Length: 261
Image 1 (cartoon, one colour):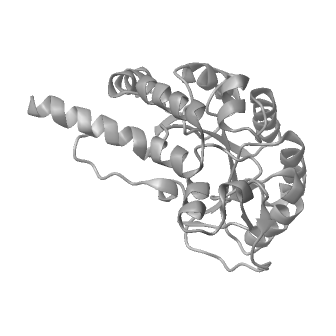
Image 2: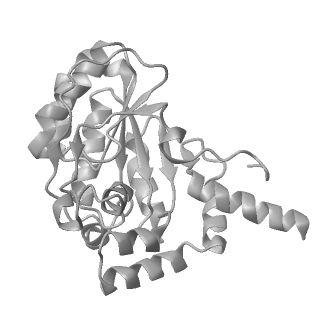
């Protein structure tokens, strides 16, 4: 990675466009950027966010240029799995390539894998797994599945012949090596690493209390530049490991500082 290289950011690193069919998300992740935006612009309150509800009534999709990411501001939760599947099929029937991103519920993924088999070559499943510790996952992502269920979902999609990927963004502790080791046998595409961006501001906007603020400070300390550089050095030659903009910015900054020095 060269200093001065252009830094792509956000979902544009993964897809040309996004599609969503819900507002709110029952996973209710404490650091959620979509929740923070909804609260900031007074679309929903913090209390309303976890009571997800459908938006729009669009069943038809045209062929788009580039890959579509679905969803980007909510998840595919059991309550609305059928709606999400309906929208996915509509996108795929139009010939679109779709990146399906989720903190996966096994029963939902099993349903999707079965129903979407005719479109398998148009799909990448990317499952978010930021820690191997269920206590940590349970704190930061209180409504989302535990570690074992996410690994089980990943393995199932892989065994069904789908292209599979993992997002470790945000990394939620200092032991992401455990996640990388565990998911590697079931990943055919990539493992993305990233830190929690705008961590403190999102936590405060989302109405989190002192415990979350304290844990955010701890996480920021764990993911200081020195440790991110060490992580980068461990995996920079690994063909599966990719770096989100949040890490690339740190690497470019540190390399620039080193060159200046």
